[in-house]
Amino acid sequence: MESVPSINVNELGEHHTILDVREPYEWETGHIDGAVHIPVDQVPERLEELDPDDDVHVVCRSGGRSSRVTQWLTHNGYSAVNVSGGMGAWMDAEKPMVSETGEEPYVK
View 1 (spheres, rainbow, N blue to C red):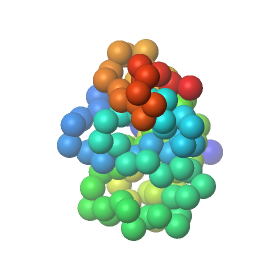
View 2: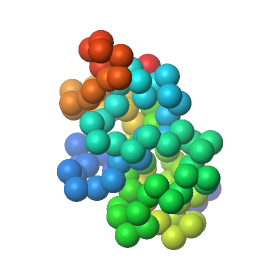
View 3: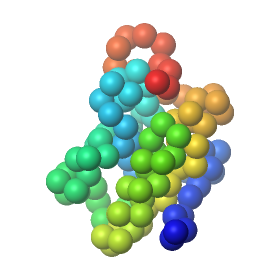
View 4: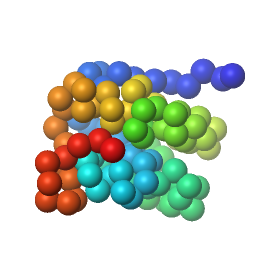
């Protein structure tokens, strides 16, 4: 299996595009403020929403889906890095999140 470039949530910088590839119901309960939301199965058809000149940090719940998307993006000329541990690791590290529900954000 090919190695996928990865980064820890504590190493994530502020000036990178964060691509959240989780499903809408996951996104609504808690996500990183300013992240781009494109569910994993929509990435190929919505690729124009990403700037090919930006570093894209890809996140899902635990790292599996984001790893596959990272690999796909790098094969298509993007600079992409998987966020290890995903939003679960983000929440465990007590990083800030927002929700679309009006409730306290959490990872589902």
